[in-house]
Length: 189
Ligand SMILES: Cc1cc2nc3c(=O)[nH]c(=O)nc-3n(C[C@H](O)[C@H](O)[C@H](O)COP(=O)(O)O)c2cc1C
Image (tube, rainbow, N blue to C red; front, side, top):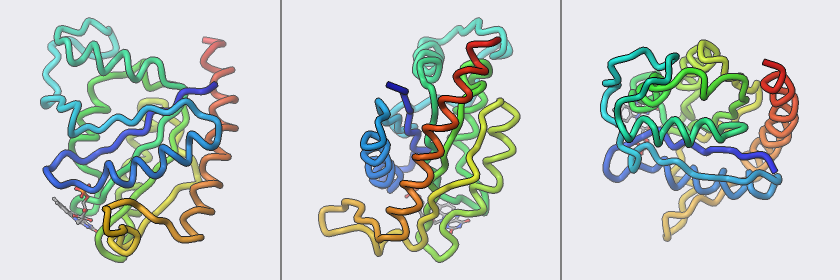
């Protein structure tokens, strides 16, 4: 069973990221993944403060060691990201910067959302090249959620429409395929 970490990127009090992350985590489970949801708001990494470059893995802080272990055990990722100022939120950039090798040769699906009509697509455009610099392969298929309030019920649960259900299924199908392929590359190092 492949392990996917669903990483929710926003940390502000009242953030909606975990609600959407919970939905895509359930979808990933139905596609055969062993899923863990990682909410950066709970993990609460400070701004990158390791004295040694992360490629050397000489971590000083316990929270870095724990973050490293979580990412190391992953076979794939799903980044759930809002759009902040036409890009992806700073806590995700920070969480990426903490590690190097742990990310490499693993695929990532991206779920973006926004309160307005643009669905976070500019967050995806900015995130993808940064993922590639860490050798994370961002899939062509993504899930983009416009005006997310329309999909929240009175219990604040995410209730997708058919378009979102279909795009999530497509992304997960591709994520399985790429996880299998990249595992072969990773084991060949
Ligand atoms: C600092 C900040 C910047 C934002 N920038 C954008 C933006 O560039 N584009 C957009 O569509 N929405 C933007 N929004 C609105 C977000 O889509 C909305 O607040 C969303 O709920 C943020 O995700 P979160 O609830 O997980 O923090 C911004 C919100 C915040 C707090």
